[in-house]
Image (cartoon, rainbow, N blue to C red; front, side, top):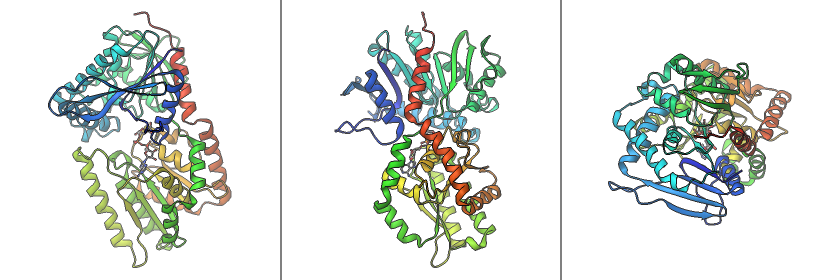
Length: 471
Ligand code: ADQ
């Protein structure tokens, strides 16, 4: 295999000692890149104001050249905050009501993808393999093909692919669908996402499974669309399972864990950890917890929901509104249900370091992971990996998270149905040790086998196996 070029919107940079930011994806992709040698290309996160961004800057770490480009303020507003985060993100998470389409932002999105292609072109060598990540960069392969690139180019979508009726609400859905056909391999998180993409092609009358592609394999399809043939497969992303389990086991002395124990006084802990994002279903979760307390009066005073949710994308108005909504709901439940000596919900609007996070997961009897829609949801996997094998907690998981396709030992719930979620919480809290152990063991075995390294390897092997292009 030749060198690898990874392209993502943001590039996670190693610290001065060469250590990558914690979180599986950066570590695993970094390891694969160190092995093959290559480039990690993307936005530096900096905007340069009104002027044009300067040339690409390079930082060499081991065998990896981290190649970064700045953006102008206009680029950032239109491409990133605008089209990516206010059209594609809500749409792909089935929130048509929040999608704010404008021609200006759409133009900015395609302009920045052209700029990425122009800046990447001089760095590409003939046998490089190129791996593009996520919804910010869907049109990149098409732009590279236009410039004559015949290298293998793969794409992985970290978020869900929506059903046809949702996608077709976007004025330029056809360009988005077509963008994927310029890749050799399109990776989705789950079979549902792949199925949705194929349905979109069929419903629009622009393509479908190629002749001879096995229709009953839900995880792999050879597709023909827009005059091109390409592979689409599922690769559910994993975590660094063993490393995270070890971190959790060693975290009992972490300060946050000690403080939590002292303050809990033997009460049961339920934990929720999310970026503050409307796709994560945090308001619905708080209401379900309130309903759980109403339905189980004997639990009052004996159980606490710890919701950790740092703000994200604060430049987008919906995210600011959400922060106010979550604060108000948590305050309401605490006001109505709380007692002098007991606060039902502890809400922390901050990030937590990984060791503390692992320890807090391990302390919790229930991991409450109830997104309204999620590509995978790594918190669900981290919660499972962090459990004490002798006395594991129970994962209550939304059926609309990609992780629900894999973690068969979870108690599944519908986050739109607060009564059902409330019953799921009660079931989780009263589950026998034997059942908890059985469910946890199945999920942990799965996560050990399907960790982030195996995800990375299986994607790259599949990309290397695709037929080379000649033009
Ligand atoms: P996200 O939407 O960011 O990822 P998720 O998969 O849950 O969601 O990953 C979040 C990560 O951030 C986890 O590793 C978690 O530990 C960390 N995190 C969250 N809150 C934190 C906090 N308060 N303090 C510290 N760390 C915190 C997108 C898609 C997902 C998909 C991933 C990976 O939306 O569906 O699973 O990419 O493909």
